Image (cartoon, rainbow, N blue to C red; front, side, top):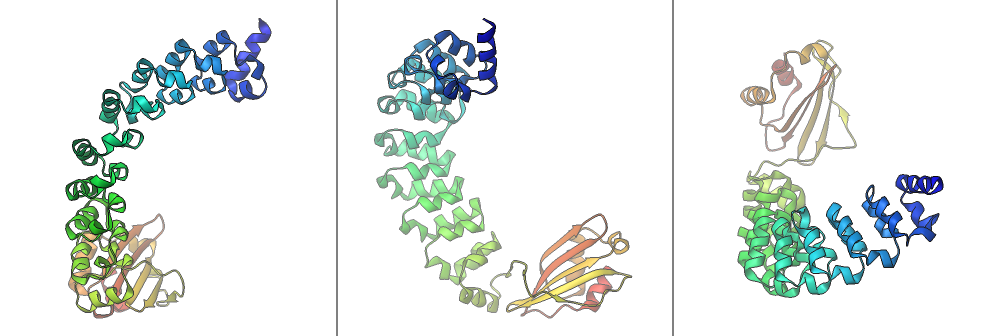
Length: 338
């Protein structure tokens, strides 16, 4: 008895010991019943006979729906057990592990679907081709478009609703919709600028459309050609924002300890990046970003991508001035900070 208690305690500490060290005990019903009280995942190392024990499988799926995956094929086809694994469970419960026949059962599917529309992935082709089911699914999570039938992926209403709830669903749309301006606009509004990488090549060269999208999220500019960026900049269609340069940074000025800790600039083809550090004393007098923006705009050239970061011992200001604006000078900056 004492030895059995030690074995139980050892397996409780490490369930894999049932697989490796005590494999000869994996058909012991009483042992498994005791172990699943503490760890339902022990069932994966039980014998096939125990995995076909209805009482034990019911117990583990009530504790954790995903343990249905370890049940026998016979019990995966047991409707009552599958219902037990689904009801009141998030993410569709154990629906994905049910038998093919039960995953095609509309009652069970709708139970799982209620909590998680993406269970559409695991159900029958008939439900994936049902317009009402698909429309319901994509209105809740556009990613469900990935599991739609080919016929419904060609349905514009379905695709538009999908990108409204998940902009990245554009990736699952047919090519004709990746070139649909209304659909792409809706996708960017929901998912942000990087969603535009899934748009058609034609739209990536449409200067007017890109300028409209940049009003939503200017990161789109990083996804278009250099030629398109130049055209946008020349026409002043959009404020061009660029990532900070990582190499070739030049010193901007000799530090003036009254105001500055250090400062750098980097000239790139489209303009100049400034990266300026102020000392602790100056930092105390720096206003909020919004107030600083107003002061900059009143007293200096236009600038973009203003970032103001405050640390314990210094402050840091980053901003970009494009070539088509007057250049920003150190004297102007000093005047503003002072």
